[in-house]
Length: 506
Image (cartoon, rainbow, N blue to C red):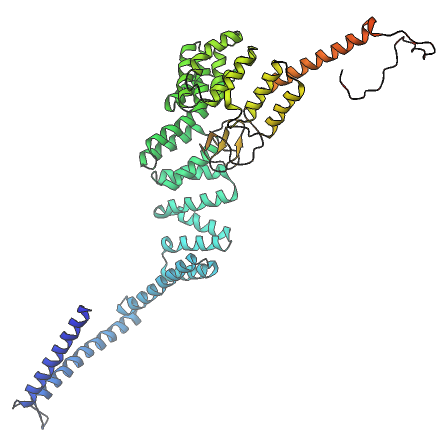
C-alpha cells in the first residue's frame, strides 16, 4: 500500500516538473532559426525541444533500417546474420514452449498431447538430451513401449543421459517381470550413480528375491555409506543376510564357512532368534556346547522362543527326561513367568510323566489368554492323570477353536509363515517377519503341532489297551455262559455269532 502511494507521488512530481519546464519554455523569448535552400524556419524554445526529439528518433530509426538492409543482403548472400539469429531465437522459443506444454500435459496425464508436444519440441530444438526423456515418458503413458524403449536406448548412448536411459529400461523390465535383466541393469545404474537411493532399494529387493545374499550385503553397505540407513537397522539387516547365507548349516554338506556365517549373523544381531538357533547348532557341530548354551541364553533373555528351546535340547540329545528338566533350568529361570517358559516347563514335565508339576507349570495360563498349544498340553495332562475321554476331548475341542499363539507374521502383508524366512513369500518384502500373535484369521500354526505326536500316541495307547481288554474278555473261558437247550449251533469254527455293534462301550 505504501509502495503504491510512493509510486503515485513520484509520477505526480515528474508530470509537475515537465509541466513547469514546458511553461518556462513557452514564456521565454528567443528560439532557433533555420535557413536552408532559401527557406527560413523560426522555432520557439518549446518547438526547438520537440524538433530535437523528433530528430533523434529519426536518426535511430534510420540506423536500424540501414542495419536491417545490410542483414538482409547478407542473409541473401548466405551469411549468418542477425536476421537468421532472429529466426533461430523464434524457433527456439517455440521449441521451449512446446517442451513446457509437453511437460504440463505429461503431469496432467494427457499422454497423446504430451507425445505430440514432445515431437514438436524435438523438431524445433534439436536437443535430444532435453526432448528424448519427454518422448519416452509420453510414449510409456500412451502404451507405446516399443517407442519408449527405442528412446531410452538413445539416452543410453549419450554419456550425459546414460543413467536416465538405464533407469528407464530398468523400470520397463520390472514391469515385464524380467527380474534377472532388471537386476543387471540396476547394478549398472548403481555403478553410474552409487549414491542413488531408489536404485539401491530396487537392487537390494531384486538381490534378495534372487537369493544373492553376498550382493545384497554389498548393496546394504552402500546404503549405509550413503547415509540412507541407520547403523542399528544396518546391523540387523546385515545379520539377516548373513543368516540367509548360512541357511544350509543343517545339511550334511554344510561347510565350515557356512558355520562361521551363522555365528557371524548371531554376533551382528544377538536377539535374532533364527540366527541364535543356527549359531548354536554350528557350535554343537563343532563340539562346543558351552558356546551354544551361552548364545541361546542370551537370545532367550531377549525373547523366549520355541526354536531356542529346540536348539537347547539338541545340545544333549540322549539325556533322560529328568536330566533335561534339570538342564533346562538355566533357561526357565530366565523370564519364569513368560508364557513360552511356562509352556516349555509343562511340556518337559509331561514327557517326564510328572503331570501334577506340569499342571503347576501352566498355572493360570489356561484361563488367561490361552492358545491352542496350552489347551493341547492340558489335554495331555488330563490324559496322563487318567481323566475320561470326554474331558480330554473337551480340551482338544478348545484347542481347535483357540488362537494358534505367536507365529512368524509379515509386518507388511500380515501373511502367516510356518517358519522364519528372510523374504516374505507373499509380498516379497525383505526382513519383515516378526514373532507375534496374528491379527488376521489363521490358517496354519508353527507351534500347535509340537505336542501332536504325544497326544496321538496317548490316544493310540489307550485304544490298544481297550482293544486288548475286549479281546481278553471275549477269550476268557468264564466269560462264555453254558448254552441253553435249543440254542443255535455254533459255526464250523466253533465261535459264537458276534452280535452287532450297538455303539456302546463296555
